[in-house]
Image 1 (cartoon, rainbow, N blue to C red):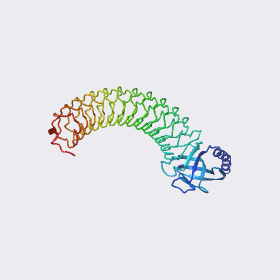
Image 2: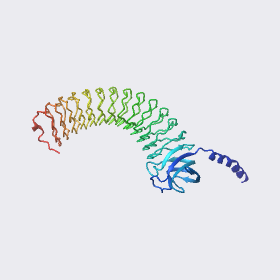
Image 3: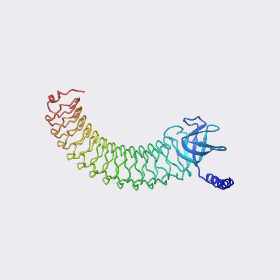
Image 4: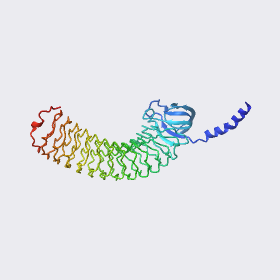
Length: 442
């Protein structure tokens, strides 16, 4: 027993020294901002056992200490601005767009906290800045997903962080509208998910070309609505990526070469360049042999006009809205294998310049052709070789296609149930309308 007491007495100073010497996680809060706690309180959405020291900003004599376990509500003498410093066994903070997210004003210091996860840590903390110059200990962290999502004022310098263990960066800067700091030194070698990482991060325009993304499988919406982004990415190793859906959707400034990308594993390219208004780079050598979804891929890509005729489209089932409002596009597509496509609705809707041969396409599986050439003003190619035996919807298919003059008398329309406005405004079409009279309107 005496030996145990001696050991305890010997170890106690060391334990106290380790606690006293630990660098604090320091934050600033405004207690009477909107939240779930009272105007003189803050709720820290934490996990772990930890020590809290608080101090009123501007009145350091107003201070105190307490302990916290998991989510803790701290009651302060009165409403105001407080500095809150945490040490000990804090493992995670997770606002997740809830709670007292608007009360947190800034991260002053990350300290020595050995974090276990940063997933949704500060999501929705719209008032939060980050003047901290040190780096958090991320040595045990796998997920940074949504860490700063909807942090509309966040623009912290975080390029020196050690991210070597992180696997998930999805939505990390989603709607972080002010963020525009260098990240090119980050170690992304373990990351598999970058989906929506910079979604609507409208100010971000920093180089990322040095990133190792060799393990990333998901890049869907990665730069969607990243309005300022226009950095070189052609050197990226995309050999494991399966999802590129909406990757550059509404990335209105982006126009960088991508033809060197390995797209051999990609199955989803739906909406990839949706409203990418200035994008006009060659993509003709891409391996698209696994892609099943090309719906809305160039929807509103008003500048794009590059050859795509060598693409392998043998697995594609959805081409709906693919060139919707692609007003400059006029490239041959007659080599495409469309034998599995079921949906071609709005495919060339408002593709004002398009006038290329398509008569050899295999359309035997297509069920929806509604609005396919709607206001495709200059389209005037034979289509009488098409197999339309499965089509049920042809409504507004050629409406406004004023130049279209070709006969369609070989079409099998026995399953068509919707053909409202099929030739409305197609003033050049002289076919006898009796061919379509046996089909019922919607």
